[in-house]
Image (cartoon, rainbow, N blue to C red; front, side, top):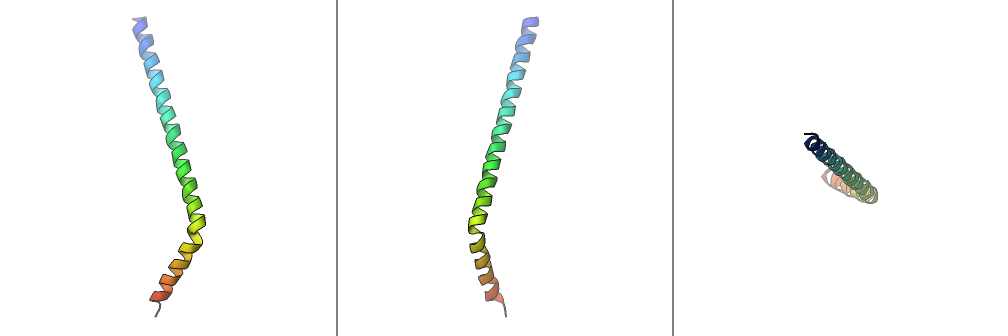
Length: 61
């Protein structure tokens, strides 16, 4: 009975380690997406602001 218990505990521990690894990978992907989004907004921010200004000026009476 002890061999089965040890085997089961080793499988559970291995599964938990894989879940932690997956969570860390998702965290890294999310951080990368955030960095890319911030960089894109910094680069395109002035262009977008200018276009919105043109649009709003077009609707002014």
